Length: 112
Image (cartoon, rainbow, N blue to C red; front, side):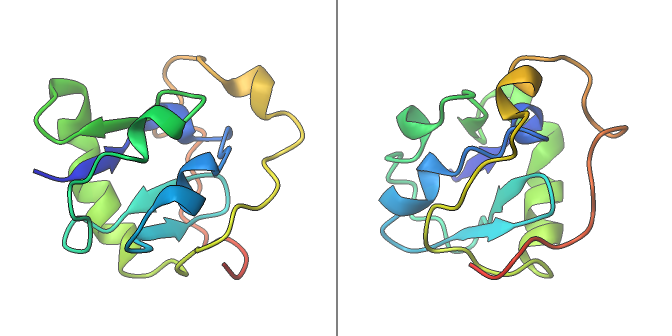
């Protein structure tokens, strides 16, 4: 099992999860974070820290379609180890449905 960042992170990107991760397995895109599934140690400390409830174990059905996205982008986006500032409009995007793929950006984020 691994943890997966799902659709609700898109354009929210709160980053509370980053600072509690003991193995630094988060990677930053322009408007979303992902978890490298091979680096995640399945500890689960990130899941309750996410204000957007966007982190799920890969055993949950809602996480299935995002597992490959997490794997793909964790290979090309920069690693992030410290919490940064979320987007100014993150609260407005929290909970909005159907953000993927229309609102997803494949561009990398800033240095972590």
